[in-house]
Image (cartoon, rainbow, N blue to C red; front, side, top):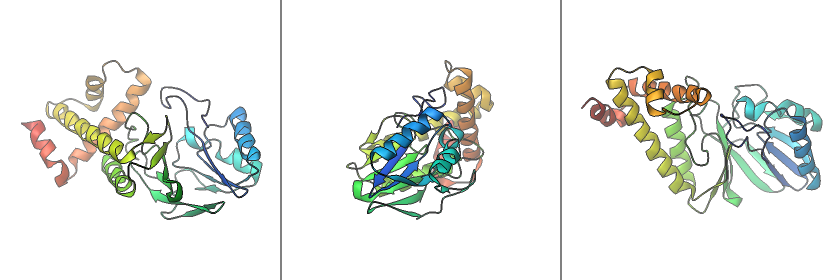
Length: 250
């Protein structure tokens, strides 16, 4: 279900996913606290003959989480996590009408990011760890490039191209292993690009503007956060970006 909160940060809006079966429903990322959207979620749940058993957040950002408490109160259901910036434990299991789903820790966009894996249906609900069409921005310093790359590797090792990703924004992602490979290459090219600009003495704000000369101010702030995350990543002693650093200085 597409929430009515389209803007520069959310693209078309936040995707709310409703998993139903056997009279139970798990609502993932209920989105903004918008009465019409909450009513629409209720209608989907009721039309399937279900009752909301749990509300799950992929991460704490408001465009995913603001409706969690109002929705939970409507159905007397718990919210996982119960507080902002809490973490749903790795391996947490959900039984939806006999179909098992489980939580995979996928930080990077934020520190508390999780994905929900539904192996029987070959689905992964990825929150903002994987988006359709683009790489998500890194909410530095909460999110990190190292965590994002590790999460992309975890997801890539879990799925084949006959799976489907259901992202936090944008349409479904098919052939997800190939998609992750392309997005990882894009991410590493961006790291190399930022390293080159940093080697010439540019600040994070200057680098963001150089990379995105036509981006409007709201989106530019997100781009700068990702640049700062890359600069932090490049400052860490790690062998996987030594070649990038050497090439940038060369």
